[in-house]
Length: 155
Image (cartoon, rainbow, N blue to C red):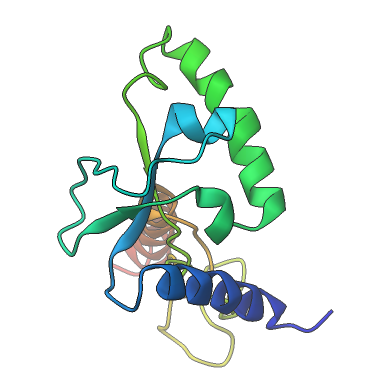
C-alpha cells in the first residue's frame, strides 16, 4: 500500500543475494533446467558466466520472490518449446538484478514533457517509463519523434 513498497521488496531480495554471496558481489546462478525442475545445484558446481565479478551456484528460489520464481518456472518451458528445445538444455539463469528500473516515475504529459519544466523529457528506466534496455530504447525513440514533430513545425 505504500508508494515505495517495491523498493522494500527489492532490498529484501537483494539483501538475501548479498548474504548468500557472503558480501563478495558475486551473483547467484543456476541451470535453467534445474530451476524448472526445482533441483538444487551442488554447492561446488561452477557454471560458466559472463558476469566479471564471479558467481556462485544456488537454487534461485532463495533469492527470488515466490511469485516471480513461479512465473519464471512456468514461462521457461514455453520459451523452450518456441526455441525447439534448444533453450533449457544450455541456459543458465543469473540473478537477481533488481535495481535496473526506477521505483518512482517522473510525471510527463501527452507531449512527453515534464509539466512545469519546459524542455525536460523524462525517458526510459531512470524516469520510470521502461523496465529494460529494449523498452528504454523504444521509449527514447518515441520521445525523440515527439520532440522532432513538435519543433519541426517551428522551422
